[in-house]
Image 1 (cartoon, rainbow, N blue to C red):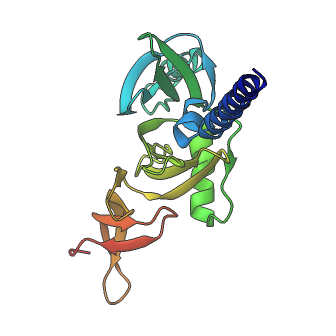
Image 2: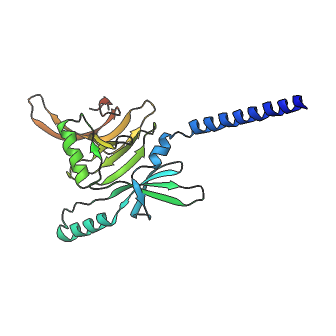
Image 3: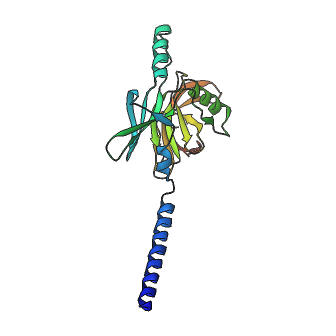
Length: 230
């Protein structure tokens, strides 16, 4: 009988130890992943935004442009007061599809949001970052393949070009990389940017006018290569 009790005690202790191990492993596997961090971007937004337009989608997560009530009021005022050259605003939203089929919305970026400028930008990029923040208007947005950034095409309201931006999800910093109108991440890690504006000069330094060409940039904005016609 004593031997039987000893065996039962050993089995019970082993089971408890096993349960403890499973729980510990489960806790380790529940550490926030990059998708978890993305899902918590911004602040909760109660309803689907006005003029919502799908920009990109990755599994249950999707990025949308849309208008807050403040955006709508601003845009209506601009159309009324300056119908010839109005400046428009919109906002960047994240939609998360839940297991029951419902959707949760979050406001990621909008005019006056508390994101910061990334350090180390040159004066041109810093000025464009201020333009982007003053009247935020996003045209394209995608998740980076490593889950660390959002790639965006924004309108700085210069009336001559658009800008390529990177938003750091962890640090909540915005970096303006270059001008152009695409953000196509390539298998080698570069980003294909089409229609970057360049001013050509002849051998005497005389302007030959502007042209647009394609470049491939690194995630920090450095040009890796350019199209052959440049």
